[in-house]
Amino acid sequence: MISERKIRVRTYECDSYGHVNNANYLNYLEYARFEFLRDINFDYPGMIKAGYGVYVARVEIDYKRPAVMDDEILIQSWPVKRGAVSGVIAQKITRGDDTIVEAKVTWAFVDERGVPSKLPPQFDTPLLAP
Image (cartoon, rainbow, N blue to C red; front, top):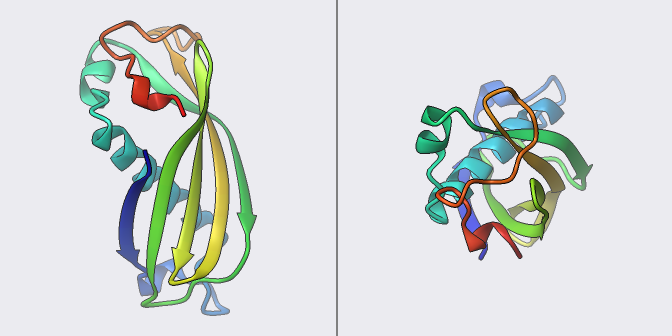
């Protein structure tokens, strides 16, 4: 499953060159991953209430082209790997046919102490796997 979200680049997200500042791509990717979890019916609020968390363990970003103010960009997110306590979500940001960013985000499920643990059955969804 590929989750898709469109956003428009805002002026304050751009640097002195007129490009989206590289740190702002992390915000775009975070937003899209949360929406991906919503799309697959992952109970994120219930998980937090139960004392668990999904932590980002690693982010790999390849910047291909700049995005600029007022660009409408599409962020796609999909799972590419799933283990017992962690996984990888691939993400791609495009503007039309142009690839702006390609990313892989490794996540880990943690218990109330912040220790990696298996997802309890009530939060384990097959759509987290490729």
